[in-house]
Amino acid sequence: MTSTVKVGLLGCGIVGGSLVELLAERGPAIEAAADLQIEIGSVAVRSASKERPGLDSALLTTDARALVNDPTIDVVVEVIGGIEPARELILDALKSGKPVITANKELLANCGAELSAAAAAAGVDLLFEAAAAGAIPIVRPLRESLLGEDITRVMGIVNGTTNFILTRMTEDGADYGDALAEAQRLGYAERDPTADVEGYDAGAKAAIMASLAFGARVVAGDVYHEGISEVSQADIAFANRLGYEIKLLAIAELFEGATSADTEIGVRVHPAMVPREHPLASVRDSFNAVFVEGAAAGEMMFYGRGAGGRPTASAVLGDLIDASLNLAHNTHRRVPGGEAAKIRPIDELESAYYVNLEVTDSPGVLAAVAGVFGSHGVSIRSMEQEGLGDEARVVFITHAAKERAIQATMQDLRSLDSVSGVQSFMRVVGQ
Ligand code: NDP
Ligand code: HSE
Image 1 (cartoon, rainbow, N blue to C red):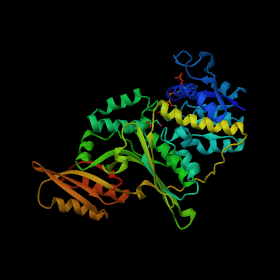
Image 2: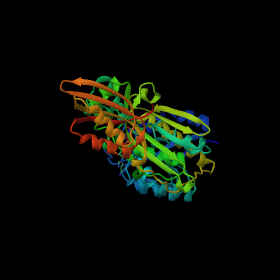
Image 3: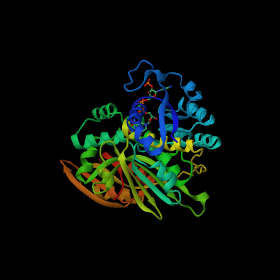
Image 4: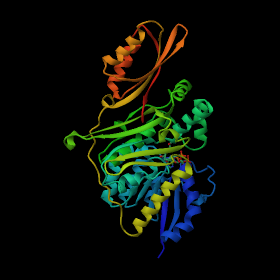
């Protein structure tokens, strides 16, 4: 017998609007495949006067709380974004026994434990496939398929906006501001794109993925992050000359200790130079990719569209069908929780580095520079030099070293008389 589920949709912007569109397109197929009729019962927005093609205006309300408390609404989809009022609305929905689907990574990375506890207490689903890497199924694999796996590392490109900007700057020489404006026009960016370009969005996704992968609670504040706003055309040109692409990477690693109390998790987001032959180097535009490394499963890579209305709505729709079926069969997902993770600070994490210096072109300079690396235990992997008139440019790639040692090296290099400038330095990942 066909079950009918009424959806309360909180937000009808880029993602919500695409969900309305997808439901209209896919409704008959979903009914045929799953004996499920999913209907939009009500849609809460901020402005009632905006044009919303394909949506019956009688469904619109500006009273989101009333929508959540409406007894005819069975399932709530939250695609408003931000912490409040999304948090309170979701808690209200869960407490009244309504499953919730959300794409809100910022909220989950800050208040995920509170929301999960409310869902568990009410015995209903809280599903969020769209909150990490858009259309790519990564939440469900980490949460379910890989539950028995000893995952040691999750690494990837998880922000579509910044990957789009870096691709356009690399391939077309586009200006950073123009590329960002284009990403906003295409519906990839957050309402405040600072979240994208300064690495907060990727950091939130890294926290969500780390929590699921390692079974310990990682929150947004645990993630070290740098964005791409300082990446210049000169950095991109140097990287290309040396055979690298610059990508904004999210990296979550497990460092197992002798006991579980000693086990640490390191989570960071920063731009990195990735060798051109590495699979992440060819992830272009708004596409994302996530590598997962497990002790038994080995390496896995998940790839697809990481941002945009329809790709994200596709992930939301999958969750909506799952939650609706669970509701129809009076069941829900059981998800193991975790204690707060012990975080390894960025100073203790290791990476190789690219260092580009302008130095005086005279005897002994190279030895002095190399001596600074050596004094901090940083080993040089390769070096290139080119003449710049009275000066020279020297470019080093180091072996992996602790962040603390690299930062101390950079500080000492800057104070050397023979170093006239640090053109750039950046982490190198994947060689
Ligand atoms: P938009 O800004 O396009 O849409 C937000 C919607 O929420 C709008 O319809 C807005 O109303 C409505 N809204 C805002 N405040 C309220 C409120 N107080 N009460 C009711 N409605 C409100 O955002 P997106 O669709 O791009 O993103 C939504 C969520 O999905 C965010 O959490 C985002 O991080 C996440 N996400 C987005 C992706 C993307 O590619 N865009 C990808 C993956 C996740 P109005 O239309 O009247 O302004
Ligand atoms: N602003 C986000 C991005 C949306 O660019 O990846 C998808 O989460």
